[in-house]
Amino acid sequence: MDEVLADLFAVIEARKETLPEDSYTASLFTHEKGENAVLEKLGEETTELVLAAKDDDYEEIAHESADIVYHLLVLLAMKDMDVADLEAELEARR
Image (tube, rainbow, N blue to C red; front, side, top):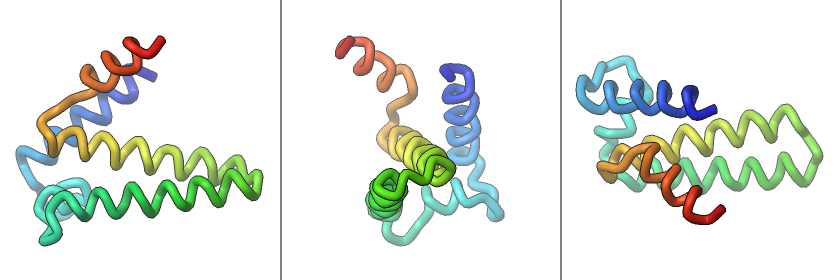
């Protein structure tokens, strides 16, 4: 899992730097709402995850969980943080 998160975060960071026009990730960094666009997506995906869990829809739980992790990583990049910051906090909670 660590490698998957690190690889995904590297792609997010690259999109942040190069801002390709056809990239959804880049559009989050340049959105007119600023970071609120990502915060709204996190709220939306969290609601969808809760509903999927309530319905015991395991495929949708996995899908929405991935959406939350992705948008969380984008938020970390926006705040000039990285996966290591997240990992350190999780480690401290063990």
